[in-house]
Amino acid sequence: MLNRGNAAQTVFHKVEDYQAFLRVLGEALARYPVELFSFTRMPNHWHMVLRPSEDGLMGRMLRWVTATHTQRYHAHYQTAGAGHLYQSRYKSFPIADDDHFLIVCRYVERNPLRANLVERAEDYRRAHPALPRSLSDGRRRALVPVTLQELSDCRCRPLLDRVP
Picture 1 (cartoon, rainbow, N blue to C red):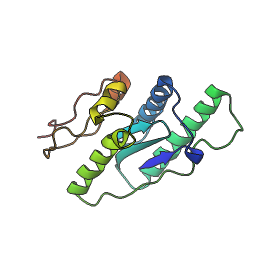
Picture 2 (picture 1 turned 90 degrees about the horizontal axis):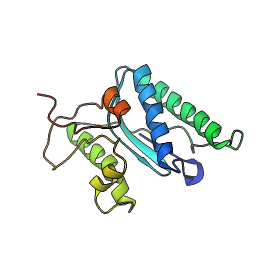
Picture 3 (picture 1 turned 60 degrees about the vertical axis):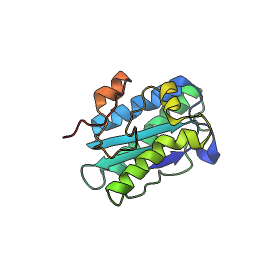
Picture 4 (picture 1 turned 30 degrees about the vertical axis):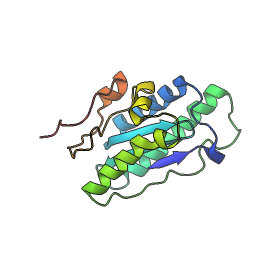
């Protein structure tokens, strides 16, 4: 899934904005039984690969994430009443199978490269160290969700090969 800033406006202006969103995401994952496999935050949008434990949870979690992030953003920047932060409700797309899952995770992780923010996708990870790593050398491996501890520590280690 993804969500963009209203009229493609910047949502993350500084490093602390990225960190604030990460805190909101961590709180959401603590509240809702949803697994996060991959995500990236760009200046004007974010992408996530999630798996809810039951129908309807993903929507409730993302409604909470966008509402909470919007409220905190407006409070921080003193822009309450200035309009929408996000262009609309999040967009989600079902993942068809394992191959599609790997393609989507790769798409999410390579988004900063496609946006010409970095020369190599892993360079964005260095600039944003809290981003989890889901794919490395192209070999098919088991992916596991990002843990709350990894989010709260902001030191997400490689997530590959932790599943037998």
